[in-house]
Image 1: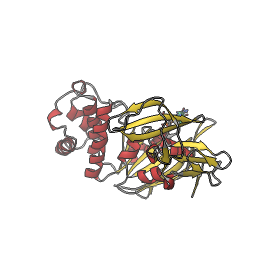
Image 2 (image 1 turned 180 degrees about the vertical axis):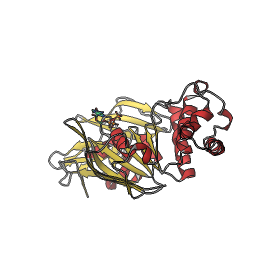
Image 3 (image 1 turned 30 degrees about the vertical axis):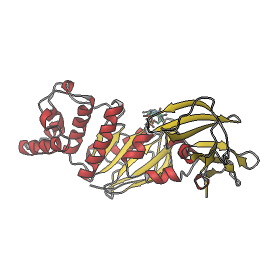
Length: 337
Ligand SMILES: Nc1ncnc2c1ncn2[C@@H]1O[C@H](COP(=O)(O)OP(=O)(O)OP(=O)(O)O)[C@@H](O)[C@H]1O
C-alpha cells in the first residue's frame, strides 16, 4: 500500500483549463472521497492519478515514487469504473482472473487470489455464473474483485455506485467501507453524491471548477464549512444561507458578514420567544424527520423538525436559530471566524 501525493497538478483540454494547480495528500491506507458537481474535474483528477491522462504541469507521487510520466500499467493502481466493463461471455471467476491470466500468472496463484477476493466480496457461490445472471450490486462486486486480485498500491473508484438503485447503493457504500477496512488499502473514491461523500470516507475533498474548496474529515467540513460553496454542497437539505441587510439577517446579527447561514436542524421551534416566524409553504414528512420549507420576507428557509411534529402548509413556525451554530461568510464566500 502507498500514499498518494499530488503537487501543483494542472490539466487543460485544448484552451479549457480543467484542473488548476491542485495539491493533495492522501495518507497510506486512507479512504479519500472526492465530491463536487458535474464537470468540476473529478474524473479528470482520477484519470490523471491512474495515468490515463497526462498533466500539463505538476507531479504525481505514489508511495514516494514519481509516476507523473509512467504508463498506467506501471503505477500499480487499480481503477474501478462506473460501468463495470465485465466480459459477458466469461464466468465471474474468469472475469476476476482476467488481468492475471493476461499477465501469465501461474494457475495456482490465480486460483488462490480469486478465492481470496471472492471470500472478501462474498462471491464464493457465484463464481460459475455469467454477468447477466448477476444483480447490479453483484456485478459491482465482480468489478471490485478484479481490482483486488491485482493487489494494487491503491484503488481508484470512479462513481462506482451511480448505476445502482437506492437500496443497493446503501449496501454497496457499506460494502466498500468494509472492504477498505479489511484491506487497509489507500483509496480515492469520486462521486457527486454528497451522502456517499459524508458517509464513506475518513477524508473528504470538495472540488469546484477544477480547484479544491476544502479538505478534511467529513464532520469537520459539515460543522465548519470553509466557503459558502461547501456550506451549500455538504448537507441535505443544504444550509440556509441569506445575505445580510444593514448588518442583520433573519437568523441573527451579521456582525460584518456578507452572508449568514444556519443548518435546517439548528432552527428550533420556540413558541415563547421566537426570532423569526416564517410561513410553511411545503411539508416533506420522511418518518423520523419532517422537512418544512418555509418563507419569510422572500427568503426561503428549510427547517428540520422531529417527525412527530404535526405541521401543515400555511402554518407559522416560531423559530429560534441555535446562536452558536450560525455560519458567517465574507463577500467572497470565505468563512469568518
Ligand atoms: N477528453 C476531454 N476533452 C475535452 N474536454 C474534456 C475531456 N474530458 C473532460 N473534459 C471536460 O473537462 C471538464 C471536467 O470533466 P470531468 O469528467 O473531469 O468532470 P466530473 O467532475 O468528473 O463530472 P461528472 O460528475 O459529470 O462525471 C468538463 O467540462 C468536461 O467537459
